[in-house]
Length: 200
Image 1 (tube, rainbow, N blue to C red):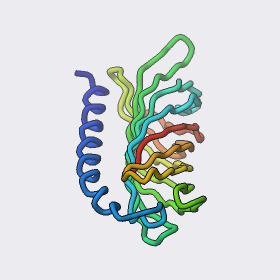
Image 2: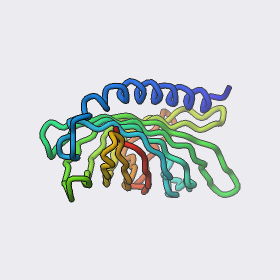
Image 3: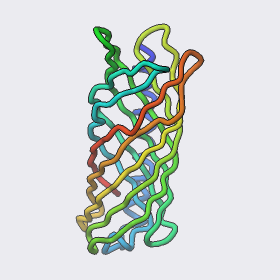
Image 4: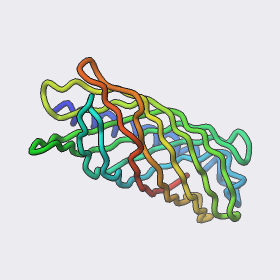
C-alpha cells in the first residue's frame, strides 16, 4: 500500500467515525426545531470539485488539475447568527509540469468562524473563514510531505427540508500562503471549489 493510499484510508476512517458519532446526536438535538434559526448546531458531509490552479514550488509554477473534494464540518451556534466550528477536507489531484505528471493528495483540518444570515425560515447563507493545518503528499518516492497553513473562504447556502436532514451548496477557495518542507517552500493563491451535501 502506497503512502498516499495509507493517508487516504486514515482520513476516510476518521471522517466516518466523526460523522457516525455526531449524526447519532444531531437529530436528537435538532429534532424540535422548526426553522434554521432554531438549530443549535450543524453537522455537514459533502463532496465536490476543486478546480485547476497553480501551485508555486520555490520559483517554479506547477499546474494542479481538477480534483474531487470531500468536506466534513461541525458548527456550534454561540448565538443565533454566529457559529464556531471545526472542519476536515480531503482532496486528490494531479500535478503537471511539462511532460511530468504526478498523483498528489492533501488533507487539512482546522477551525471555522461563520456568521449566519437568514434569507427565510428555511434558507440561510453562511460565509465562513476557515483556518487550519494542511498536509500534502505526492505519490512518488523521494518526495517529503508538505505542511502548510490552510487559509480558506467558504460561502454556504443551507436549505431546510423539515425532515431532520437539510441540504447545502457551497462555494469558496482553498489557499496556502505559507508552507513547504526541508527542500522547498510550497504555496498557492486561492483556488476555487464547489461542493454540496447534507446537514444534520
